[in-house]
Image: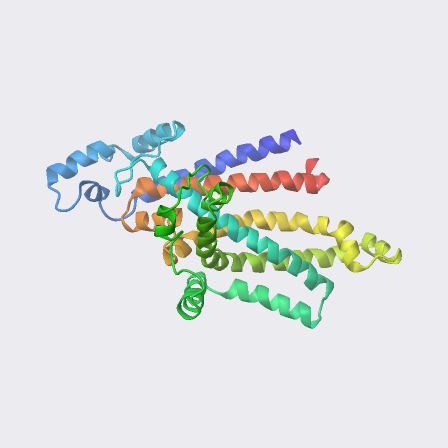
Length: 337
């Protein structure tokens, strides 16, 4: 078991190095002059040359890469060309917003997708099964940007139930005494007893989280249904039925554990899908997170910020999958061998 974790840890480091290396060299090949962004409007040739020296762009690519790796080891991701602030600071200010959104979307997907998948398996080839499978297909089929705008039109434009954009209402936030401890608005407002902010934050996160969760809902639903159908065909399931247990009781007693094994793997992979979806969703809902920051960085060729976002997204993805692997080992003893 220890060897398994060591192998996974080494693989995590290798993945991070490969992704960062590829991103570094691709960012250097992007069209445009990053020094112009650093200097500002109407720069002189002397200012551009000085900026190139300051940013180290006058060196060879290999020297730039070596310098970047040395700084990365020290936790230095460079300076954003657009904001002139340390990239690590910019990412830290936005990380909690994105992680909170992705986590809520993932929880919603699992809360609805897993039980619906089990219900569809128990009602195979019935109208219930067809209806639930249809929900999964619809979730996978809807483009994220289209679904987000449709939800805005319905719940803000027509019904006026939920806010259009943003993470919170400014005047409610400014009138409160909320102090951030974890950086997560829902958590901090809940434990601080700031119920007005908590309620407002719930309303703001509903639409972007629902938009992001639809595709993952379909994946979790279909995976759990397929896994449960396979489990119901195994001898132990029939044995429980012969002793007088109903299919529902059998699932609650033992069968759902077998279903959790493939579902846990899918959840880990879906985390990366949700992270990728933040670029579109945060732009649509004006969510102040890493995705929105990434879009602006790409449009302005802010390569230190692009590399920083890529590094953080990759690190988050491999860490989450590492934790899923640990859960997988406890769910399936065969993986410990």
